Length: 270
Image (tube, rainbow, N blue to C red; front, side, top):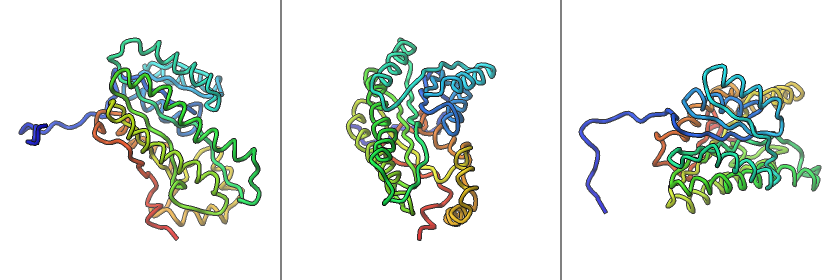
């Protein structure tokens, strides 16, 4: 074991580029997933976009290819193990050259707010299946390919609700807390095999669906906004610095971490 510093006198800046890597993005047909996929392609990765909405995926693929990038669409339902295995098989074929590092951005999910007394078993199953079960089995299947290579980057999508509470967030927060726990657990198991597992935890992020929800409940919207110290809701683009950092070699000594990209949400807790 070497204890002395191996750093040379010359400091080299880390690269956030993703050339030579294959990035798999679930939930990539819109919102943050679409933004992540396009950003990974711009950073040099070959991208596999996956979602249930195939036509929307094809639009993302066209956008990436028109900009000179490489992209492929795979129809995916994260709650169906056979569908997840099919995604992994497609990725394995694309990554036949095992020198190519793999990235998985586990983005598939949806917003959910409902009072605890109104939660049904169907609600529970849907939220936990997509956010916890789907995240785990996507990580498991793509993680196998990473372990074969002795290197890989998994980025899970947690949330500020994983460590804070509000009315109507009991089940969604529980699911996202599971994602953060899972992130640490997988990092612990797979770190010795070269696989880095991290998560990002966004605050409320503007999308077509969230904007509609905010418009329907202006009082709640005002209350949530007051909790964000930077004074605005997030845009999907606000997540890109964290995602590219965790996907690139710049973060090779970071694993098991949930990075809060929340505009100071946790500093403004009640």
